[in-house]
Length: 252
Image (tube, rainbow, N blue to C red; front, side, top):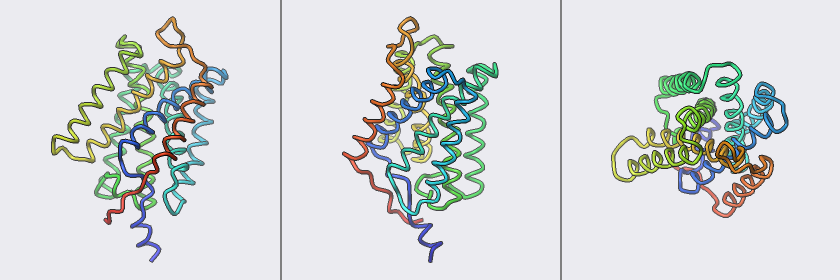
């Protein structure tokens, strides 16, 4: 009976417009929050990554152990993945000297590998099937890789490709619009569309976060990373509780 219940209950919210609004805000918060710890507090990328990795481990353990969907816990875990993704990508790209292109390639390979192992193990990578602890672990590992990849892509677009933060935001906004159009007007796999959108929202959040807190001399607005993070967190909480999300009731 417990096994049947575990396979029936989902702890992932329905993918609606509210989901994506919170996701973009959460990924932007990940950028400003990660930079606040590693840069503003001068702890560096390695220590920042260690701190956020520990928080991610605590959050994902609580999320996987929970018996039902808790919006605060779910989005706290998402934020944990995006903060550790920010500092980890910066560590790989900058401190280890791999560069944005090398870091993005490595992280893309890890992301694809995670999806392939997940698919071979359970037969699907659809979020509608995330109803067991094993599926949840694959889900969160995949999300962590996608968040880290997104940071590297955002930095590569803004810096190496010399598009700047506003240019990078425009590029990823257009790509997300293309994915949204594919959702509404094509028969492309909804699972593929979800993961494409999920991955693209991260670099969008990365460049938006950099736009908020980087110096004016490099195209940013030079806002306080701590203040920007507090405003973004407040926005997430307001949207979360103003527009409650439900979980999928589909049976698998």
